[in-house]
Length: 163
Image (cartoon, rainbow, N blue to C red):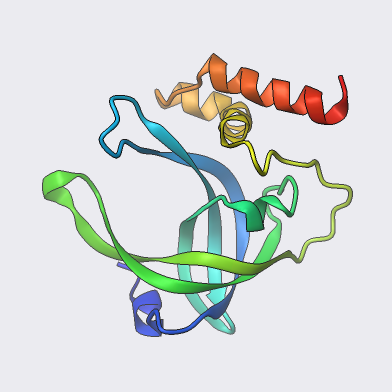
């Protein structure tokens, strides 16, 4: 359990800083027969002002982070967010933990220009981008790499770059 996040509480927004490590996605079914993928990003060494919070944290990879463009491992990001509790694990092994929600005022502190644009409004293309970025890792760990999503990303990229 992330005790330091729990101690902050969810009543207000706090300023956090972390180091981008990689993208990913989580599977959500919500009563569907096939998974619905939710894009995520992994931050490591998360701080709130001058206090270390946790060694890693997965966040939803939403528009505020996507607007930064393609993040590179090691990029420092800062943002405001609320602490919220959630249950993790499967069925009988569920545990209570704490994470961050609704990030705002997201900025990249690492100056690397120009950054590759990402599919902000096309979730399927974004999942394809994530699968492409993590292809070797996913294949080695029996995670899905679906050609349909890869095609959605290539199609989006060709449309944006006029190819």
